[in-house]
Length: 387
Image 1 (tube, one colour):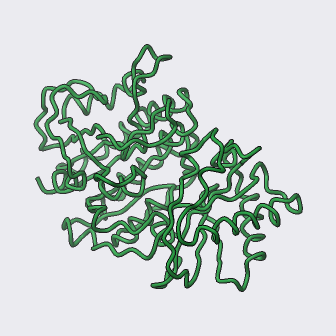
Image 2: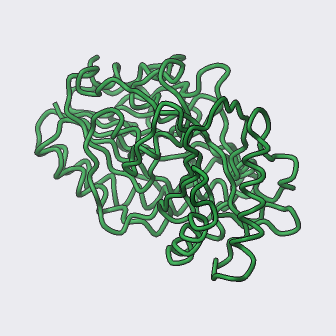
Image 3: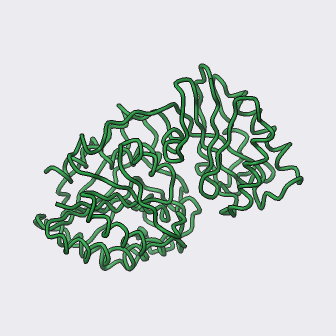
């Protein structure tokens, strides 16, 4: 049996007035996704456990099959694993976004999708500013970078993702708790010393620190589910989950995490990888980015490109292996109206050579006859792979 998970980040939405009160999924032209729904089974997954935030870290851990209540230690340590950064027992990692804040308003949590050349300038300058202080900065992909504090001590912090405060006053969302003063001081020094016009930082005006955590420990995916797995993603977080789970990372050219990504290439590389692997997890970031931007057109574009450029390649490729299953799902909802994540359950499709179709004919957030409804979202992996 061969398995592909197609994770469409943030795809689920709410009815939108401009689309005649349809959701993005209901409005978009997605005949191939609807075909998998018609010939597969549809249901719901609660990917965010009670009491936890609906971040992509927690929700993707659930889809991978790991109970976040047991294994979640923070977002940034997973990204550190992806980047090959060793964390000691007393070290703490943080996501370090390059952002654009004007008159205290979070104008862009991506610094308007900052170019790599500006990020390199910023990271080099930050490391120069904080050298010999046990504070290290690492360049990631685009605006998504990392900071590590060595021997951080007893830091117990509450931080806010910058994508949750788009167009809001950032002052009230500064870090809080034990160690917050240190983070605020780092961000202030960065603003004064790095974003002061001495180097070209593009449209970035600040760094924003969040998503802190310590070294994680996940049991090997192959031991848990008895299949050899690999991951395809443009995002360090998702690759980091794969690395921590002992899975291989498949590199695909020209993947960006937005609607200009190489959709078809992701599908082609995944299908070819099944010659070596039993399970491939494909992560597509574009719908989530569009949701955070509040862009109806970009989110519609994202799902239509998934449907036209990925689904046919995946379906044709899977058939060549005889026995196969495909899971299509978001990790969480990122509604256009709210520009942030929600913890409500999300709709999913399981399609495959051994799957008997249920009575659902189309895919949307409103499944009339769900074949599964998983309150413990991490159990989706067992349902998909074993049952």
